Image (cartoon, rainbow, N blue to C red; front, side, top):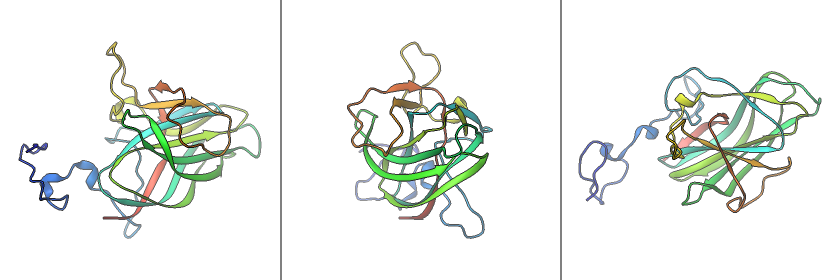
Length: 207
């Protein structure tokens, strides 16, 4: 039998209702009763920062789901704005290929305005099974915008560390003229990155 991080044998007859089969991602706040919580790809409480992003470039950031969840909102925090008065950003979620690339579009959530410094969110209804996923973010502003994101030390290096053993890589970028998202994206050319704005998600229910 395989062993887990508690160094206990895993009985195949058990499921994730048994505590020795759970990881830290298993425990997340659902709903808005008492208080409201949003999640991203963060792994600690390092202070967030502002990440600059130009238009017409999708940034894909991995996040891990360890139990079935239903997400009811996606959101971003615009920290520096400017440019055209009709500028918008578009958010989405993709699943992952076995090679850890974004693959099939799960949901194109649509657009939110990015013309003012503000938190912007959009209502969704999407259920995710356990596995690896990617958030996607693109915008069409005529100037470089900044979004709330995480410094490199606040993110788990899902995509590993390059052969030079320098700073870890934890996102992809893809040159893409602003438009509804395409599927699949697996066969496109991705560029690895070390910093990404966060697309936050709120959990409505979990199983």
